[in-house]
Image (cartoon, rainbow, N blue to C red; front, side, top):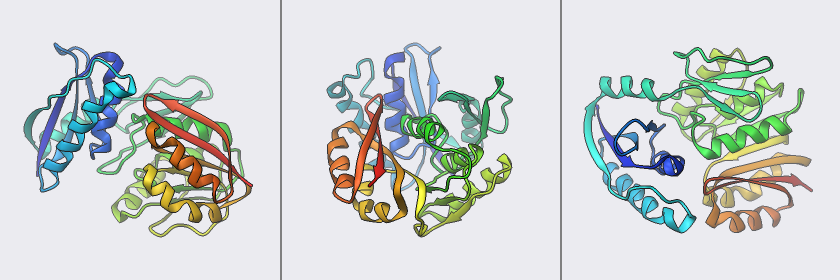
Length: 282
């Protein structure tokens, strides 16, 4: 398979937003090239019939960044075609350990991060699934899980991708942990990552029944709105919903949809232009 390497100029203050634009278009991660002149961010997409639309999506996101207060990002894409083996090597070069929240450290299996006492490593090889820990929405959800998951609570991860959030919940002591994704390859990758981390998660393609003490849904605003009634039946009364994948311009729409089915807002967390809503089931 051939891959398109996408390079976008980005000053340090804009690189998270540019990286988020790449990941939202399908890149499983992004590479920060601060040593380049000018500094840049790079990501990879397969060369297939979806590429043109994905590139247009990235371009639209880049042009919108100034309206969200993000300056220092280029609007032009530089493309280069690479082969599968070159992409694999490049991917390993830019997926580095990331510290999230107080004690969570996300790391690929080929790295050996320095851990402080009390740190919890999350060893993730995403393959082609979403979830490396670099996207702001993933980081918002990880930090929220660290604050709200206690040993013995039940957790469902809706749209699990690489399984990173389900694995974090399990490592924080949750049991049982159920991970859902509509893409069967993602549930396979999530199960493999769980085994690597020495934890047990149950993977499901259909939504799990519940109810659960904590449900985390890191998807997209429109998907969360459509799933709102289903999410309400899967969080026990008094339980917590962590909803993210929400661009700030859709925050009010998502909150209104969730309030209409019985959720009470508890907290809103923000990173760049992304939002995580933490709500309690009434």
